[in-house]
Length: 414
Image (cartoon, rainbow, N blue to C red; front, top):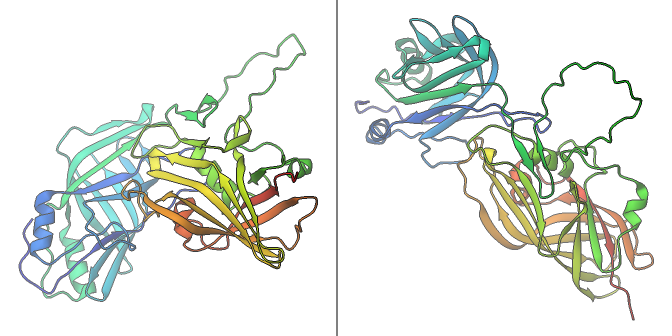
């Protein structure tokens, strides 16, 4: 693709929707892959392409999550998110994206400058698989380019001196398939993604089988659990949270099988002095206290041993929290949790950001006002995310979000 010199400096930014933490299955995204020649042409023409508004780095791979899909003699696929075109301080967002695969023509439509236009042409380079009875659609490496109508609309909207060319930009790929059977490896059990049960006759026996625990849901939060922490330990609970923008929803999300950039199963693993309170549940953990240092008045510093690693390869999640340190202030009313570990702030698309390591940073605030030290214990102390929020929950849970409760049972004296 070749561009003439002009004041057109366009950036295409993907605003991909983050999947719901309650979704049982996240379909594979549609992928726009900029070709090497396309990237060179953009660079020669003083153009840039980014995959997220958070990133200024050129990203050759853009992703759009798949929405409502209709398969028949032709196919339509709604694509969640938007493409953002920028020229200087001017921007034009292409929204309501819809892919159409037809017998003779294929294209992506969008709403641009309040009008619906054909935004991209799709030209297959390999046979397109369209099998409605099997629920499958596969488009691989199809060439994409701006349509003349879209190029004209962009010139008018962005007040460009020249109309953008309509030569090949890169490739487009998308696979639509039924949800796969994916194993869940949460450190203790392996359970296939459940399928719809087949109808069966009423059994003659009245005996009922013992249900298999669901590793993606926490056990019942019996209030007695909060006071049962043994001396010299700290228990971290998320089972008592509502599961909406908090540690419980994050845990559920990580353990939910999903399609994406890897077929490796998700997992939450406790190690190095940390263990699960319930072997089949990754929602509640126990850490070992390695030191307890009193300070002035009610202040104290409590060092913990143990690590919790959150892994969801399908969405590029690789997050770990370790070496927790709890600092309680001299009033005994508030506290802070410091930790080391690794994290990667999500940037709107999956699998493009390598995790960053950090050491001894504040990650949570504690409110001990309703949990005074009694009998050597602080029971059910609420914790909330603190800045930098991207250290926890992939950066999708801002400061102030509930991040579990802690019961701190100090080592026995004497």
